[in-house]
Image 1 (spheres, one colour):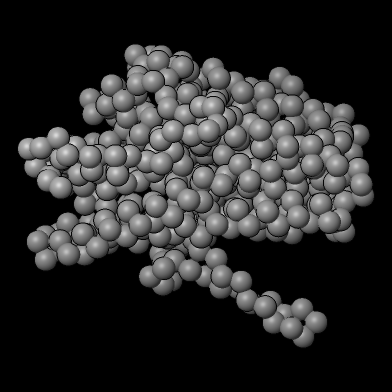
Image 2 (tube, one colour):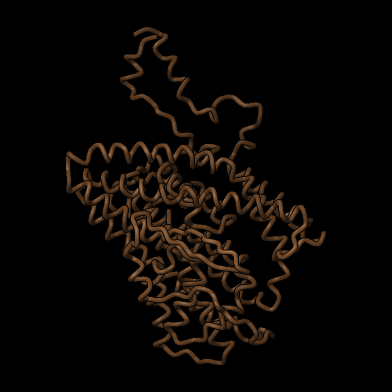
Length: 470
C-alpha cells in the first residue's frame, strides 16, 4: 500500500461536507426551513394585503401558488416508485431477519396503541372545551366531496391494475379533461405481494431484486435533489396559505382550531416524549433527529410527500435498520395518522354533534375510538382528514353537512395534523427497534450534523480503500 492509496477517499466525501464560504449554521437544513417560513409568511402577507385572493391572485400570489404546488407535485411524483422499490427491497432484506413477522406485528400494535392514546386525548378535549357550543355560525355549508366508506376501503385493497393507478374524466363546457391518480394503499399491497413472491421464488429472483435495489438507489438520489430545494418550496407553500386563507379565516371557528392544536401539542410534546423516555431513549436526540421531517410535513401538509425525508431521518438519525425502516415508514405514511385520523375526527365529531344539538352517548364515543384505531388506513391516498371525518360521522350517524362548516380552516389545521403524523411515523419504528434490540443506539445518540442526511455516494468498503492503488 502506498500513501496515495488514501486519496480516493476525498472523492467520495459529499460536497456538503467540504469547505464552504458560508458559516455552518447557514448550511443547516433546519435554519433554512425556518428562514423560508419567515420569508413565506412575509410574502404571503404582502400578497394578501395587495389584493390577492384564491379566485383572483395577483402576480405575487400566483407565483407563490405555483412554487408551492410545483414542489408538492415533485415530491408526490417520486412517491410511487419509492414505495414500490423500498417495500420490495425491505421485504427482501427481511429474509435475513429471523423475527420479521414479530417486527410487523409489533409495528401494527404500536400504531394502534399510539392512535388510541391520541383519540382519547381528542375526546377528552372535545368534552371539556365543547368546541361546537356558541360558534355563532349558521347551518349553510353543505359537503359534497368524497366520503369515507368501510366497504369502499375493503374493496379498494384490490388493485385494478399493476400500478394502482386510476383515471377520472370530466366534461366541462364540452371539453373533456382526464386526471390520473394513484392509490397508495394499492401500491403498498402490490409491493408486498411482489416482495413475498420474490422471496418464494428464491435464487431465480436475484436479478430482479438486484435491479430493484439499483432502482431504489437512483430514486433516492433524485429525492435528495428534490428535498434540497425544500426551503424554496416552503416559501411558496406558506406564502400561498397566508395569502389565500390568512389567520383571520379562523373567525368563529377559532375555538375549534385552538382545541385541535392543543391536542396536537399534547401528543407531540407530552405523549411522545413519555413513550421515548419510558424506553430509555433521549428525548432531545429523538426531536433533533426527526425535526427536519416534522418541519417539511408542516409546510407540505402531506405525509406521503414527506415520506422520503421521514424514512431518511428514521434510518440515519434515529438508528432504525434500513431493512425494517423501509417497511415500517411507508406503511406508517399510509396508515399511521395520529393527527388526521385520531385527534381531528374525535374533536370534529363532537363539534358537529354539538352544532346540530345531538347528544352523544357512551356507545358513540366508543365508536369514535374504534374508527380512529382501525379506520386510518381507509384514508390512504385520499384527502386524509376530511375523508376520515366523513367516515367517523357516517359511522356515528351524524350529518355530513357538518364537514362543510370546517373546510374553511382545514388547510391551517392540516399543517399541525401532518406534523404530528410524521413525528409518529418515525416514533413507532424507533420504539419497536429498541424493544427488539435492533436499534443502533450509537447512531441514535450521535451528534447531529448540519444536514438531516448526507448525499448518497457509492462509498467503497474499507478493504477496498486499503488495496486501491493509483
